[in-house]
Image 1 (cartoon, rainbow, N blue to C red):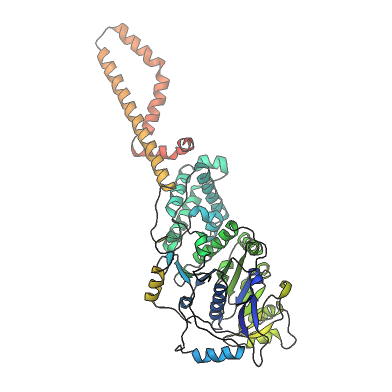
Image 2: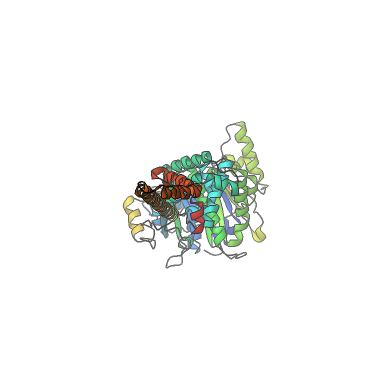
Length: 511
């Protein structure tokens, strides 16, 4: 494999052979092009190249085609002859082989379940996922702050929903400390959580949470594992898809140590359908993505965005993407032509052809490429025939997928969901304890009242002196009894329990 990944080469009408140098692979990259122009094959051959170089890979399988990475290509494949002819043209000795693939699925259907906790996701990403207003995001931040201060683990959606109920019941007290916490905002967040739950979010949150080390392993032959996230069904919830990938990228950034400029990446992360991340995203989120893209390369992580048009990626992020494979763009409208021209202007020009014309004219399986060369300088743009893959082109069968999952090192580790005591259970126990205390107070008051009635009845037929003494005693403690009576009445029955749960702040902080 040498020090680079062979991307493709030339022939008549094409430029020099192109390779992605491993030492610059953490400088990120872009794979762009219209539907049907060959982005999936490019993604597949890059995943193969990184795996063969001992670099673990994470990528999402949006169309269900990339599962073929787990199987070797074969000579009886319908495109075998065209592939072999292309391999001969670009000087490639094509060998068919399979690669180690770990299948993951947020829905737990086509791969090992992958989860995180609500606490790890955090209020910013959750707010973005649910499209909360500024006021609602503020309330969500208050809820997370309360959970941190009171030692309430937020593991799944049930925990967050229970905590929001508590915040709504104690909105007045929380508002005095943290600013306005309106019950209307709490209710709006609860509705959005219900929508998220219906979209599959319930499967995402919980334990056991994903251990990033499980995505950064190699097989016994030194090949980097290819982590494949089944995303064909997940794409029905595009915000959930984009937010999960952004969370994963953020976790890598926060947990991995600084490594400077390694000889090859520690992990390569492919973000397919990247436009979903940036559509209608608040500026704060876009700034965060730009920051992560700029800094995560020092952690040895390369990030590659895959999208139909480079214009889908904000300029500040686009400027961080050094290695580029540009498949054909179609320019049918004035807007398309403007974007095509802008895309061409981002490449280092080649005097042999016009870059914009080349981007418009390349066919399926061809691309305009620019890879970083020595000293990290962008290479001159070239027209390139993309090499054919060594693994199977197209999806594997359900039976094959099940067999790979059963033999996976991850088999059994994440399959069963854990449900340990967390915020929901802890709040329920505290509420029950407070309710029992209220019932005990109510019973004590009833007992005291009954004793008082018996006392008065027992003295009714005695002399007037005793009667007057009792009257004076009752008068002297009338104020205290009045207060006790009011409290007891307020704590009676269901109404009393609801009030106790509403004033749990005191008991809550005492625990």
